[in-house]
Image (tube, rainbow, N blue to C red; front, side, top):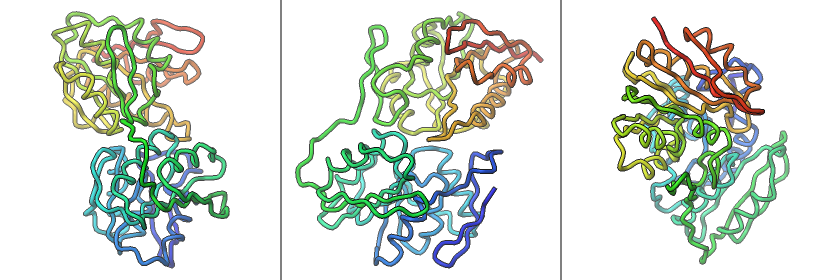
Length: 365
């Protein structure tokens, strides 16, 4: 795996976090390097960084004043790890996509897979923009969509593309529009008689995804299952159903994505809940939970990657009580049962349709 990159005559060591065994993957892209080249000769006092997933921008722009808008707990860890690796200051000015910014001079965005999240970023920038604000958006050409331009044109008068370089391009946004449609950037989703809300960019926009729906239709929480954990909890709909079925249960929700966590807070504010934005289960009590539920992720932006889910499974085994249950829904083709049988005493496919499986794992010492 390539971990060395030269930027503006300096060499940096950059590693991915979470770690991956796929040696073709790197902790930076040509799109990010192209954005750095674009701003290299500019006299910029302050940059705002969006979707700097592994910290290449934070490392290369150490001589500038930067504000980093973070979306994932694992992203914050990755940035810190790579700053330490390069013997750079780990003091980072972090903001969330829901925080108000002040006076955005130049913003760098690695365009995320979610167009909704891209729009949320642009609205956050636009609110803090002035006539000379410039936004540099990097993307790999194979992922280009005309929707990038349509979204950008809602907020900026000038939207231009750069020439391609190593299969990457930039969108350059200038002249913020004086009048734009003020959107709430929150989707409403109905589950039974409840209206759930989630911020733009949270998984499955506008509806409950079919895997989660299959899981919910077959979920039965036992009366004795009082300590419950929802892993990769998203907007909190599974946790909501758990709390509805067992009024005595306390539910802990854990998700890597801060907008997912903020969405679930809107939906479960009256429930007995704990909210954790984290990418691992390392900080949870061992042998504590009676039940763990999950619709685990297997996408990492544009990458299909089950390694994150497999690491979560190890954490689940560690925090389940003896005889505790782990219930998950998964695409049948992922063959999770093969991995789960190495961790749990009993692994059973409870329900199955053409696309999904609901798997029950029992932990016995």
